[in-house]
Image (cartoon, rainbow, N blue to C red; front, side, top):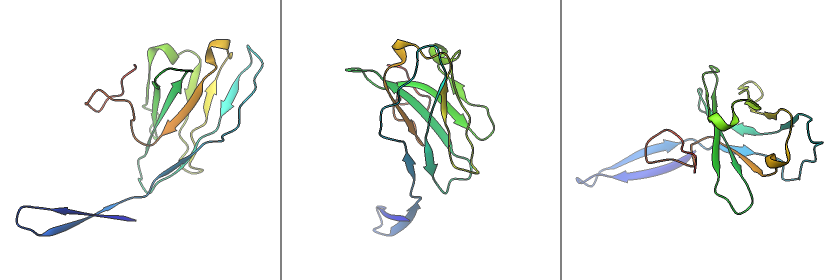
Amino acid sequence: MLTLCFFLFNGRCYIIEAEEENVSQPTEDVMVVEGQPTKLSCTFDTTDLLPYLFCYKQQANGNPMFMLREDIFGAGETNTEFKERFHARLNVTVKSVPLTIQRVQLSDSAVYYCALRPTVTTGYTSPLQI
């Protein structure tokens, strides 16, 4: 556990325990035949009982683009651009959320990220496509 100390005006120190979280993805390139499906691995470790996983796509020289958010209830959110061919299912038992791409296209060439917290936002809590 990480321990953070937050000081209030009266000088008292309140201890806040923050959970350690971690997301792992393979670092090697994935080679796929155009038109075929592929599955990209993402595993995570968190003490959060109701985790959310976010997926992002970043093309060369571009900014990360929000793709989708998944939760254990299957009530996630998918950016319109990715609804048809991109799917992920959060599995808390094995702590993974593989990203499946149906009918891979040349335009799918990119770096894909998964995260336990939104990383591209508007200042609100909902992710934003840039």
